[in-house]
Amino acid sequence: MSSARTGVVVAIDGPSGSGKSSTSRGVATRLGLRYLDTGAMYRAMTWWMLQHGVPVDDAPAVAERCGEPVIETGTDPQNPTIAVDGTDVARAIRTAEVTCAVSPVSAVPQVRARLLGLQRAAIDGGGIVVEGRDIGSVVAPDADQKVYLTADATARAARRAAEEGGADLSATETSLLARDRIDSTRTASPLMMAEGAVHVDSTPYTLEEVVDLIVGLVEDAG
Ligand code: DC
Image 1 (cartoon, helix red, strand yellow):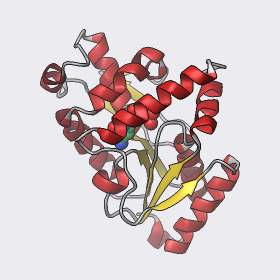
Image 2 (cartoon, rainbow, N blue to C red; image 1 turned 30 degrees about the vertical axis):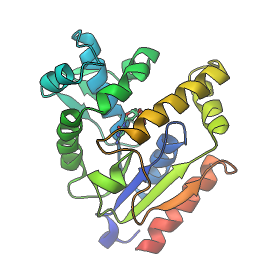
Image 3 (cartoon, helix red, strand yellow; image 1 turned 45 degrees about the horizontal axis):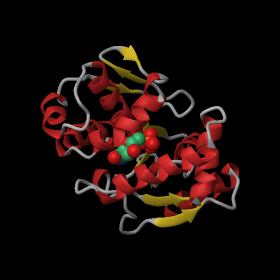
Image 4 (cartoon, rainbow, N blue to C red; image 1 turned 30 degrees about the horizontal axis):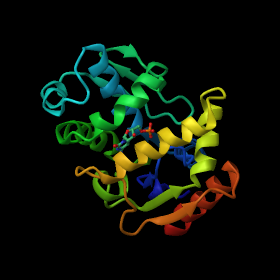
């Protein structure tokens, strides 16, 4: 990649389990870019709410406290880190308890506004691959390359169940579809394909093939 392209911003959006994290990290590593997992930030906010006994379905209560947690994210694609109030929460944010609570927390507009500020600060200067649900539409609408990554629900559930150490496949699919529904129908920044995004359906491809495809798109866009 030429030095003129080092400020590039790549936005990768899509539903849960579409392979966004592995793909985004792979693309960032191949292109020598930083990496930001915005889903981890929503999970970190949710973890903090649960730790502090804030009822996650009570939107005004969540809104009132969402300015408090200090959320710090590392941007090395080989070693993505996330800390809340100085505590490493990289594992804690992947528990079923957090996964079940994250959709209502991320539907609160004040939560989104707070995290949007942190995300834009991290993106500042570019040279980064950013994954989430609203990156191409809201967080970085001027991104140099936008990708909307999807996969069949069954393929997504199989990946997620494997990540979770062999969790029940049909329960995983049901929970993925429920989260998709909440994430796509909420009023504040719903999951959607951004204008100008390239739709990549990863179902028939290996991770390496999807990474190759997106690296090619970014290089061609330059
Ligand atoms: O990508 P993930 O499954 O770790 O994301 C966790 C949740 O965070 C997901 O259910 C929706 C929410 N999210 C969001 O609302 N906006 C983003 N940019 C990223 C994630």
